[in-house]
Amino acid sequence: QVQLVESGGGLVQTGGSLRLSCAASGRIFAINSMGWYRQAPGKQRELVAGITSGGTTNYADSVNGRFTISRDNANNMVYLHMNSLKPEDTGVYYCTARMLITGIMRNFWGQGTQVTVSS
Image (cartoon, rainbow, N blue to C red; front, side):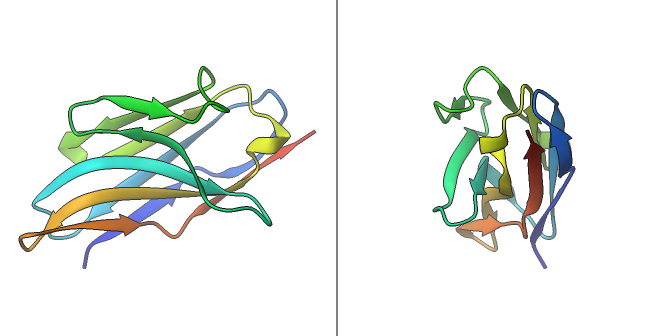
């Protein structure tokens, strides 16, 4: 069974930092792109950051310069380092990965981890 499991969410004050981790497990042949989305209450899910298998990154304008995405290809992990957090960063953060499973490239999602930034 292939799955993505996030960890590292929590409650932090404005200006604080958190690091989210996501582990991919199961019978995975290859992982292409990985990324993080978030969903605030009453809002649509939005892309926060993405990273290709070669390490090319992209960020939402709202987090550029504050968040850093990285990955550990040897261990099928992706991370999101979040600095200078703001109340508007509050939401459920989801890990996503495009993975080659039994000859088919598919998108997978984690269950989400809550990030709450208090003012």
